[in-house]
Image (tube, rainbow, N blue to C red; front, side, top):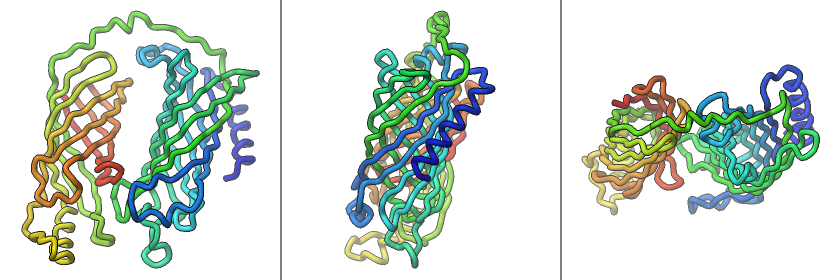
Length: 364
């Protein structure tokens, strides 16, 4: 989709919503250009030019009607549509839709944008027609974006400007190989337009005095899904990652975690079998234990019923040692009640994804 048609869609969407909106909204249209990160030594043939793209977002402005609005300095939330052209014959173009949050600092001049959604590529890996694409093993995948920008809204008749830096990530979480994924870092500039009713902030001072101190809570969580080893066409296998951990709530926004993981990842069996046969010089026994055990520390950021979880772990037990000793995890959790939650996240080793995990758990 080219910029002129995108701009027309931007204007028509804003005008249409302004006719019936009972809330304040902001529409953003951004264009970006950047570079692909070389996070794997076999990616040189995928980096032939500077990728370009556009992001269109419509977001609702918060005003303080809910407690979390004022706690997070009145963020904006809504949906986004992204198009990125990698300027490479093997990678093609990606499209993505999803959920976006904008957070503000420094008198609302500094904007932090966080978005996550589902992406589709036009050029996935194919053993015959596109075997050089080691980044996208599936047509559909996950997309995550982070941006930091200077933003000035409503400069003239609702129009504003923003400029900053954008990071984009595409990966299928190793649901199917190959899946090196693609990360880009970019410069982006854009225009914003505010519409809807006149916006005003309603501070909820009393809500900030709520005591969020708790005793240590204990969590049990099951994460599952399917993934494939890095051996292409070795087949998708289920995995079961079981964790128990303690967390301590520090304040309204944060809790610290400490716990253990047990990884029952059946695709590890395929790697053991492959290495024992194909690389005899490595002296990998076909009887190696595929199970792994790790310990981790983590942080949970509570927004409303939604929270963002980050964890850093170390393998205490891993006979294969195929991915190093350190692992990490980033994910989203949704609390159906104070004790029951579900989530989705990605377990990685550095920039290399191992599994997209779907989880359910209890907090006692």
